[in-house]
Image (cartoon, rainbow, N blue to C red):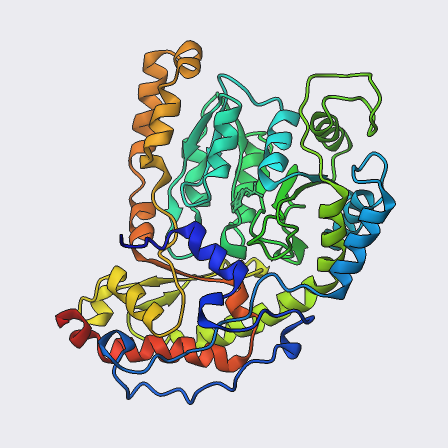
Amino acid sequence: MKKRFTRRTFLASGCAGLAATGMSTVTATGPAALSRPAARTVSNDEMPALLGGQPMRKESFPAWPVTGEEEERRLLEALRSRRWNRHGGSMVDRFEGIWAERLGAKYSLATSSGTSALVAALNALDIGPGDEVIVPPYTFVATINVVLLQHALPVFVDTDRETSQIDAQKIDAAITKRTRAVLPVHLGGSVADMDQILSVAKKRNLPVVEDACQSHLAEWRGHKVGTLGSMGCFSLQASKNLNSGEGGAVVSNDDSLIELCRSFHNQGRAAANSNMTYARNGDNRRMTEFQAAILLAQLTRLEAQSKTREENARYLSAQISEIPGVSPARMYPGVTRNAYHLYMFRYDPAGFSGLTREKFLKALRAEGIPASGGYTPLNKEQFLLNALQSRAYKYIYSEKDLRDLADRNASLPQNDLLCQEAVWLTQSMLLGERTDMDQIAGAIRKIHKHAARLVAS
Ligand SMILES: Cc1ncc(COP(=O)(O)O)c(C=O)c1O
């Protein structure tokens, strides 16, 4: 059976490294310590690997996650403490303190996942049946699922194809009297147009919940993302730039909102402990001490890793921007730091003698460069149509309401185009040497040079 290279398997390949190529696992502390074979001389004179030539790259990219003695020490500390839950331990508290400080936020609340962080934030805002939430269609499904979990209505705003972010200029027109929040995503480590989003939200008196699940340490005009809206939500899941396998965090400068999140994530308890007094209904979305132990260690690596990603991404963009048919994702002028959870570019077959994106991706993988085509249009997903036709939704909303929403969400032409032209590389591919970037660019150039042959093959 043909193996599909889905977004999840692609991101997983970034996590596990390309074990199949026989490279040893990286256990040292950073790119300088990576010992890999010297890069092959980059040449695009050879035939593409797909047509029998030598692949541009035979060795794997840096393995993800990077782990070492610090992780082992902290994990053992958590284990031996016999305090495995945040109520008895201190590691989750410590992680929250450091994360808030790193971001310049007043508060940080650790959660069991990024999805949990978003659920807690929507609960704190009391978003529920009858409410509309503005969301981008170009995102991981969790952004939409959390709105559906509240039995609220996700209202999509089309994508700005050049940046892969929500088109903030179109948000105002999507707001109705039912709109209760704007939920922009900082996609791929870059940042949505926060000037425009905050200005519209202020004018309409709406809270902004930043889905910063992919953008650890990214900045808008010098301020860390997650701190710009009412609340910001991070994922600490395995593929993320800061990870503990699973995990998440809400950050906020608002005392009452963070208290509502804290209470919600701790079964509605009034205080951050395990007593039996409940201020409201809630859920268990708590982080374990083991997750926090790994995070405390991973935090010591994050800044250096982020710098390496940025430097390599900048270098790669300079190289591939010159290739006709390849356009690296543009950043808004307000982006002062990109976290590069993904390296994203748009691919135009017209620059490659009509070579389809699917064949381009196949050729790139054959050159030893793992790449994926990214998201599919969420607004057209059957699961979403089913959810909106479920018993609960039919109970809450009139047929007309649901039909109107379907009409509003039906046409997102820019997003459709982006879903056809996007190409993604994972963040861990940016953690190595500059020669790795030369090989990525070299592989694309080689495919470009022989595109007509590839089309004919
Ligand atoms: C944009 C976005 N939002 C939300 C999530 C959900 O995070 P988690 O997988 O930690 O629940 C993710 C994770 O992939 C994400 O990329």
